[in-house]
Image (tube, rainbow, N blue to C red):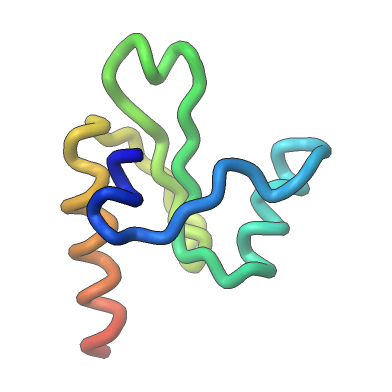
Length: 79
């Protein structure tokens, strides 16, 4: 995948169940971000990026995911 190729650890799904249950599972696994990518987002070349720490969610072009996630991770380490 794009993220794995950039050295970013990913998981396709964290178990069965409702969407909210999967986000909670991601938080329990100490994930910083959830990338939400459905058919509509895919057709637009976008994904929804949810910050599991702040709760913010934004639409982002797929090709910008690595840059955005890497930038945030570096910022988090510095503070």
